[in-house]
Image (cartoon, rainbow, N blue to C red; front, side, top):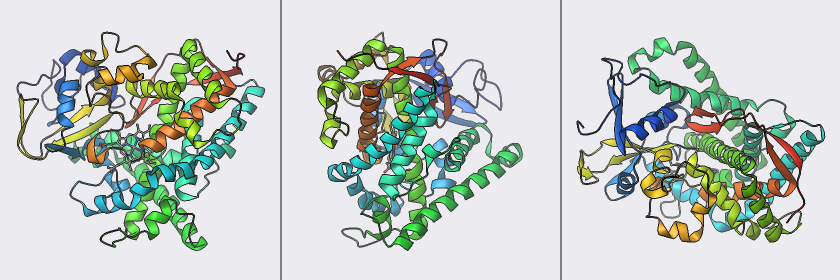
Length: 460
Ligand code: MNH
């Protein structure tokens, strides 16, 4: 450990807290990483955490024979909410494999093609809302509206449920409760365990109320399904009815509850952030927006409801999304632990069970891989030739290995579809005074991003 640098000015007891804020753990770590190099450690109240931001070490950590997902820090703090649901399950918990095998077919190509019309329906609600805002001369609240869109999308495609987000002026209470639990899980890392009951007394009470609300909501969704006697084979039907193809085992009612919360939260929060960052960059780079819009016109023409196959053909729009996820991976870190005693990168010995946190935004900006201009927004980094020229394991917005994101195709399809529809319809005008600010609540979100919608310029 002594070989791994830490920030200067470490204080006794409290550790490396100088210049660090409980509200911006990711951005603080990004700053430290730039100063300290590809691997560094931060200490807070006797707990020392090793961070990896360099591409070479991150690629070594992707070796599944030596490393696996580590459920720690923010993810572990979500255990009271999401329990042994897919995202927060420990590797050794049998419910992980069971739920993975039962739910994976819900993310197949055929399943995705089935969700497509519902995704379009929800997108049309967004377009109607934005048309009204434009007609009234108002700007739009991008993160709030993207959250409405992605929550409705996962709720309807996965669970046949309608939160009515677009009919509400304020966020649905489910969203407020979710943001509350995510914020609490992040905050929980910043105080030592024994002091938490004292220092976070009020926050803990609020968190208990938020968790109770999330549980009530999902119990309602499950009860409604049971009363209606089954849906059309969506995720909830799989959770409730599908037995494991080999063992015949089924998910327990308590585990179903955890999975519903997991998918309602994991299925919308990060996609909402990804869409919001992409819209920020499109508004700040009119030449990129023009190129993307020209592609949409070319591939979609003016067909009002583009088909499933027509979404993946938006290659340049997809690059814009990838580039936004490179700079601001909305799930900004993932934990990796050693399966057995090993040496990381041939230099750092790790005992079995020792773990480290991969800081995705640092990995995505390593100049060794992305060049001296790594901080610059440039979707052409994702054209086919550039991707082929890069080493593997350098772009990891969806994590890595067996525990990587199960919803990746779902998110990419949804987000590409929506960006295509928005580009085709609106000219996205930034507020010239806006400077990108990042709000952290385990996930990342551009804070205070509002856009003015213009009539789109005539197509090229
Ligand atoms: Mn998703 C795991 C990022 C969209 C459901 N997701 C992960 C991980 C990352 C991630 C990173 C791995 C975390 C870890 O190793 O600890 N996810 C994203 C991003 C988006 C996203 C950046 C959107 C953009 N995720 C979605 C969607 C769904 C979803 C959409 C569901 C519909 N994600 C999951 C689940 C897991 C996961 C479930 C846990 C998978 C497992 O461990 O088996």
